[in-house]
Length: 417
Image 1: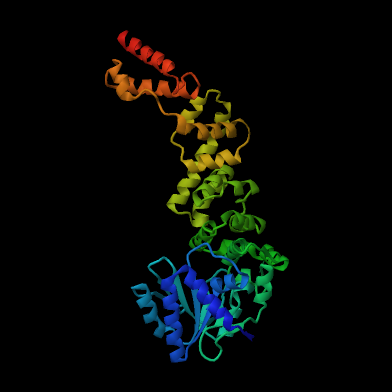
Image 2: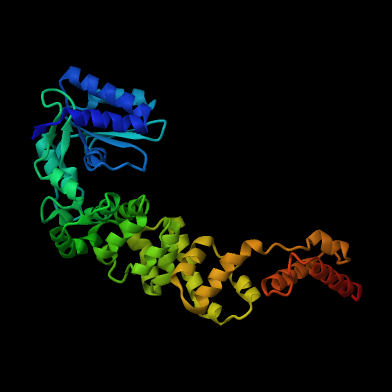
């Protein structure tokens, strides 16, 4: 334990750069807490980022731990947010979303015990020192006292400063992943977020305990995995999830090939790539096992449907036939397939994506009617013929003479009817 009053100034400056509303709320919370003799501590990601020196690229989420009754501070949060904070009595937490998108969390310092792997913890009021011992990783087991007698003190009983400097994700004890298997997913998230690594011993613990991921409810696993996909560097987070074999811990047949990382720019593209790469038996199990939302399931199904066309796409010779086959396929599975597939099928998808925006017909439906085609399905057929000619290089949209010849073809064909 050591005094670091300058860290409070750094924290204040960090908050001020990202949210004036959060700074005003922070100052008010500290003032009320100091006057009431309530011990308040900065904990969590904001303190970690300050100690590392990271420039955050996401909305401010300020975590404050209260060693005492936090209810007196709820009114301060309510005033800052313009509405009552959401309160979770079981865990002694209150959260306020501020108008600018930043948020502040107040949590009563507590202990946690786990009755079985993957179960929600049993909590009890405890001191800040006990509270830090329940944290997921050492980099989060540190607190900066903001008020009362310990103000300015950095409380670091588990070597957080050491692991922050080396950017190392390390559990506090060897049963951490058994107690809360979602910590496996968080390990991947935080390793990516801080640009660091997972300690060898912690990786060994992950191998021993990842099977406990199967004991989570689909909702808890899905929520935790969704947060991973929303990380600023989701590709790096997925890479760590691959190294820790998190998908296999949840569902034995679900793998995460390294190639899929090339198609993980967004959650929808990731789930499309799952449909493109996983066997049918696995895809059928994923919705219930992983707790997929309707949107996520749609992305998986779109990838699976495109995968079923792969052999046929590779055999098609005419670009117009490929365009017909791919018309209506959403962008995410197409973009994923272009990155994941090699050979003729990959080339077919890549060529379609590269050329489709330029496939604007130089002869409109109105012009086809002016050339004598009667209103009806023949107009649509002519538009399809024109599109095929563009794809196959039989018509150049920039060649006025070629367009005139095509129009004459339409006029003569309909004159002969």
